Length: 469
Image (cartoon, rainbow, N blue to C red; front, side):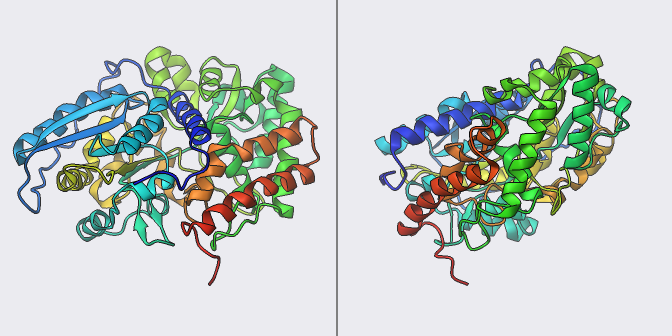
């Protein structure tokens, strides 16, 4: 089926490729997987028999995981499953920056891999992929209800289709250098956006070390901008998928970001790629960033002293909420042309049943959509098996579901939200006000003028809601 329902194809590929590249760089691979050695206690996993006899071949296309140890485990593990169920499995890993274009090429050619893994919501592929409602229903029957943020990142409430299956996700906490925040009285890190402004301004003034929140065309700036909006009580859409960006709360959030920039940042934040905040934190040139735990995992091996100085905070509290976007959202898709969809679906159920093994081999980067499958997760977070100092450094992530949400909050990750994300409307809005190119009120109004036609287009094509009750 044609992908023609999307906005301009070349424009989409350019934009989504940039997002994907940002995701790869933002997460930072953990480098060598040789140290520190994990403690005893790795889960043994389970074999899930298919519901019917399988045969033939299954081809999988996926990103190269940000934690290389994951892929070293994953490939032989999948092939072992295939040998047990009578399926010849092949796995191709590519740089995530190349994955959107590769997926589109296969859709256009109507041939390619049976199963493709993306790490952000991909509603734009809905016309070209199988509905995976049967997989979600079976997983729910076996493991309980899927985590809502995963459901909202893979389900279209208008068409009632699961355009993807999301069995895993990654939290996006704040990462800070404790040695910089202790002297300003915030040794446990900022709790609120007010704390962040006060503390980061003091650190900038006394240490000449800036804050690391970008306003650039990359994924981390996209996520940070949304977290700020939500925490101030603003959003792009409401629960009925109606555009509500032009609000007093959004203007206040933009005013806040402009002041944060003036008091605690420098112009380089407007041209960052998504690796910039990781590199700056690890080198001591940034006091605080919004990111996953991967930059810290990298530092564990590259510079243990730096790793020991990096700590984490939950989502910062604003006037209305404390909310952050998922850093990574797993979206497995089965294209319409897949030759072995039965094997693809059975593998996804097997993968879900082994979410504990997935989490372990990602060094606790991957979190499950079905919590009961990983009963030891909280114990691991309280006593990190991979050498955290102190051992309970990740304990705050036990409650990450309380402050994490999906792109599109408080609505779903629909096709319109996907286009707004891919074209960087939100970081551009913040940047224009911070640079003084527009007042906060004008920057928000201009963003609304870009967003409304995007929503109108997708609504006319029947892929987002009409806004009725």
